[in-house]
Length: 293
Image (cartoon, rainbow, N blue to C red; front, side):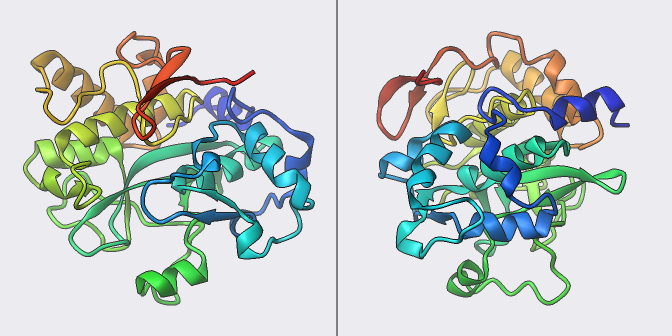
């Protein structure tokens, strides 16, 4: 069960989601918030090569948005901040926390972008009506049409279905947190080679392991970029040692269940998991400070 202390923790701002005054101008109602964020951000296909795709904090995002108007004003597509799914997640998480609503970023894989694939993705997890809901701010009508995603009238982007750690076949419209994906692969119910991004080598058990560590960091309110590397994250040619597999099995079991996910904070201080002052930006092939000021 999620405790009141845990809810209070996720209702408060984090180091990368500081309580900027402008955030409270955004809606507190989740579906309206998702729509507002869709008017501020635009997703760049593939890996971002624009500077805004590498912004790590909400404060930096708001600094870039400020010259084009208030947050309540939807921008034309060419005026929106170019980012990735993690930016579409970080901004509503920060806004919900600014309103005192428990929210956290979850790193994992979506089954609704490409048939037969678990595509690398981030979503919001927020507390409402006594349970944790998954919400995907990136799924605006234009993206659904472009990707040919047919959700049907019953699909609610403010309450995205979860996958299952035991079912051999995932819900075709589900989001699976990284821990759930790790457990399914370890049980032989999912092919790790179809988890990540197709075609560029960023898929497989090593990528799932990295996303699990990113998810643990996000649960400790350190929501890093999808291509930031640190600690025990393995590379594509690195073996996953027995010790690392044991650690990840433990973390996956905790984080796969939203009611126990916060318990991963007990293990987060481990040097293998904790975000250091500098991380390696894989896309830029450079070490960078997490905080710019």
